[in-house]
Length: 263
Image 1 (cartoon, rainbow, N blue to C red):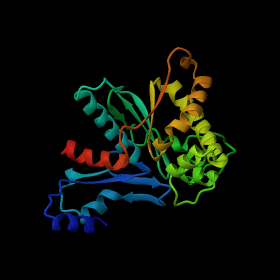
Image 2 (cartoon, helix red, strand yellow):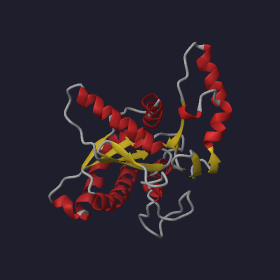
Image 3 (cartoon, rainbow, N blue to C red):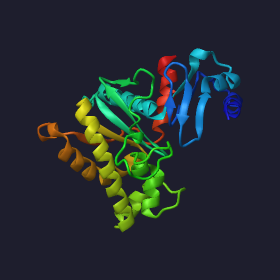
Image 4 (tube, one colour):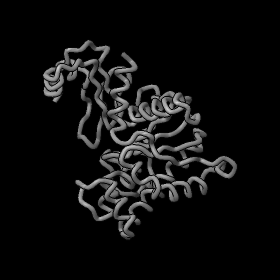
C-alpha cells in the first residue's frame, strides 16, 4: 500500500514530506510499535520498520500513532485556527471520543495531548461498563466498545455491518424504534464511563468525533443525564457535550498535521 501511494504521488509530480500511520490500538510511545490493535488482529507489529522498508524518507519524517490521539491533534489545531481568525476562545482542555470501528479517546489538557508514560492512555473503549457484559474483541467482557462500538450499534439497530452511524441517525430521525434504542443504550454506557473519567480528571468538555460525532444530537441527552446523575461536581459545573469541528477523516487529518507541524 505504501509503495502504491508513493508511486501515485510521484507520478503527479507532488513532493512527499512524510509518512504517518494512524492505528486504532495500543502504540508504544517513541518506538511506533503496535502492541495490539484488537479490531485489526495485529499484535507486536513493528510499524516503523515496515514503513522504513517502503519509504524513501528519513526516520524523522515517519510517524505511527493512536487514531484518537491524532484526531484530537486535528481538533485542537482547528480550535486554535478559529480563535486566531477572530472566533471565540475555545476550551483547551477536553476529552475527545473517537468512535469508528473501535472506541478510543484522548485527553487534551491546555491544548496538549496527554499520552501517558507508554503511549496508551485513555483507552476508554476497554473500560468496563458491566463485568458480566458481552464479550469484547480484546478478550475481556463488558467493555464500553461492546456497548457503543460501531458494529455493536449497527447490530442493535438492525443494520448491516457495511452501514454507517449516519444510517442510524437517518433511521432515528424517521422514528425507527431499534435505532432509537441502540442510541439510548450506547449513550447510557458512554455516560457511565465518562462519569468516572470526568470525576477523576475534572475536565469541562467532552467532544464526540469520528462517526460518533454524527450522532451527537441523539447521544447528548443520555450522556449528559448519566454525567449529571453520577458526577458530584456536575451540580455546580456543567460538562459540555459537543461535536468535533473536523468534518470527517479526523485521525488522518491529525496524522498529516503531525508531519507538517513536526517537520
